[in-house]
Image 1 (spheres, rainbow, N blue to C red):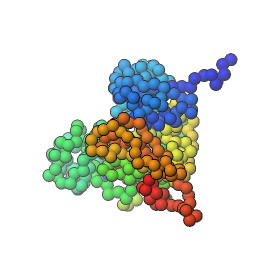
Image 2 (cartoon, helix red, strand yellow):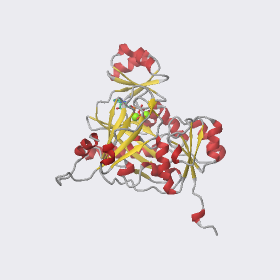
Image 3 (cartoon, rainbow, N blue to C red):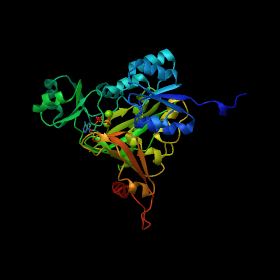
Length: 385
Ligand code: ATP
Ligand code: MG
Ligand code: MG
């Protein structure tokens, strides 16, 4: 009889091999699960920690088919994955894809995503599709200015978004947004929050709600727990659970929220994958978002989402004017600070504001004088690293 110990674990095929793929690989290894990633960049960030990389475009039919043939389960760590192709390959090979390609398709188009949320009774900012400048001006009449014009597809880190200050700018702003667009009422938010949720086989779990600090529409810091009143946090969790119920397919979802001045919660957008604002879970939670994603998509029970300690996560962004070879520097304090952790993504080139890595600082709980350390103090220490 074969011992279960001699049975190789399953292989998880991942479309995309960036930093999320790298952290998925780091989490999967100890579970006895090997990853194969598909990514067009040879030597992609995930490649050192995975079994193999298939070098190919995300929509390369042969490459996705090869990935499926070598895997027991398929997932994606990038929203540029091709839902039609994944659906076809799932049907033809029988290798399950999680989250479902249909969920990916809905989320890829910010307008379709918002329509799905509205249909489910989930609160979102007011929005409208705009096909031309006249439609945009009509929407601004109603929403007022400023407002946020968004490319419906392909945007990330604020690329694809353009604030509009005046109806006179309708033409130029629409021109600056490639492809089909929508406009949203500008939310004068009190805070940006996010809930990382995970959907397993017949179970749903959420991590502690985080508070997100963006500058230039790029995430800079996540503070956990969010410094919001308990009733707001409760509402955020409840909205997030409604979103998770709506999603089809297992896996981790990042749910970005606005807390309005009236303490309402509105959904900004959903990511059908581990999320930058969930990186804190590696040190700050019992089971991190990457392990949860691997468990969920391979049909294993979920781990505990319990938070261990108050945590601040800070992104390391490219600090250059133009692309050049990346180098690590200025991190001596991080290495010499207890409970500060560095995650370097191994990207060969640094580009302006490119996500190069992140630092997590977890709470020691006490100040040097023996008093309790609060989140504001933890944040201040994190900003001094
Ligand atoms: P990501 O990198 O998270 O995928 P994205 O490029 O898809 O981001 P959004 O999440 O739509 O862009 O917007 C980026 C940021 O811009 C938000 O986190 C928020 O700070 C701001 N923003 C977006 N929409 C609005 C809005 N309607 N009102 C006010 N601010 C907004
Ligand atoms: Mg987005
Ligand atoms: Mg966003």
